[in-house]
Length: 110
Image 1 (tube, helix red, strand yellow):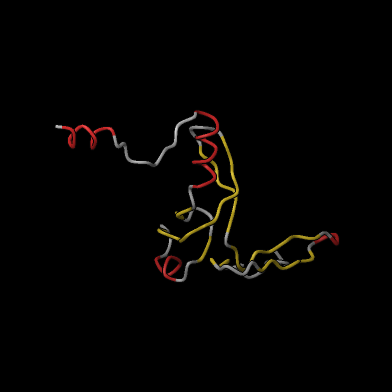
Image 2 (cartoon, helix red, strand yellow; image 1 turned 120 degrees about the horizontal axis):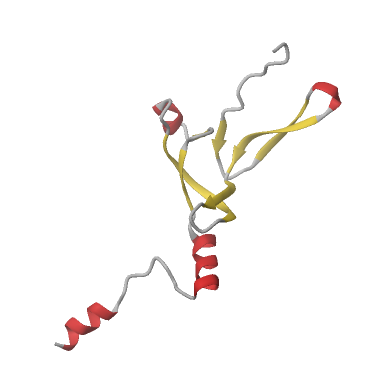
């Protein structure tokens, strides 16, 4: 408790900034101050991919953290779906996220 530090208050930003922090025993931890990407998992498919974070959408603890785009544990963020779509296409052969055009062509043919 004597080495308690201020929270990192990691911001969503395009220029990644990570600081080195010396901790007890001479070990090193890395403190993220600004990030733009992270590892996110798709639970039902059991895969994890590194993807870009687009924005902080919701935070149950404080709306100020949403306004300032602060990344904290349990924050709801919007991520880029491209790595997951690419995996799904490769694994199942189905391109998800596209509108089906079969119904539209039937209406035009009638």
